[in-house]
Length: 292
Image 1 (spheres, rainbow, N blue to C red):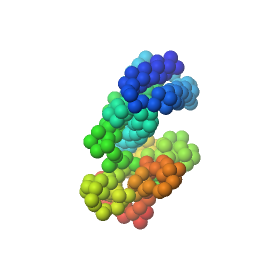
Image 2: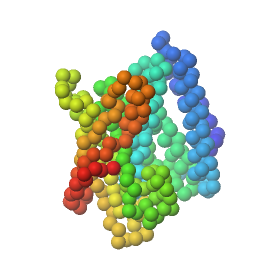
Image 3: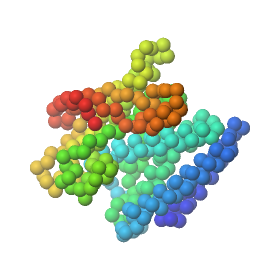
Image 4: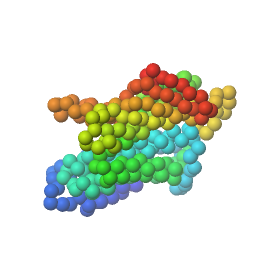
């Protein structure tokens, strides 16, 4: 495992250097980026192996079809993660003076690279396996960032996340998390993933529509006390849920303080709690005064 991690880090460093050379390049910054990302990547892989894979039996490389797990909530989460890691990759390469297109393409694929590395770990672990479904949504998340940046030089449609603790979290803490932090990662019943579209950016520069106000559509699921089915309690009904809500784009709220802008923007991936309408797969509708 550690040998594969080292090879992937080396590969990442080589392609970053090879494709980022240009006259306006800030070499000092680029070296800092390469060193930070390489150390962070290696540390993440080593830590992940120690915490997740070390005590699990290994096997030869194999695949596993998990596309029906958790009503695809985990898949959407993969895509959102890849999207934001790609955004971060783009920003640091741009900060280093790398050209716009190279920053987009090579920074934007950082999420796909990182998450595919995790899939390789899964592929050599007996309890799991390499998931082509995960790779597909990882690519989709990176692709959404890259496509928007190439087309508009901005992200008009942000992927966002919200969470509230579900009624099922305490029923299966071993599976859905034993505390709030674990719940936020494992309790798919309480997670909602959003596509938040900035309306003003589609109306043109002359519009007076508030530039911080977005329209958001969300996807969630409920009633899941097992990955594939509810054998734990067959009386609980699994269901998909769809949401419509307004949202506040924190990345478009600017103050005179760069620090304040950075702090505010850091929470831009979280869907702002506002009224929402829920439509579930069984045709029922529910209104929320404030939805998390």
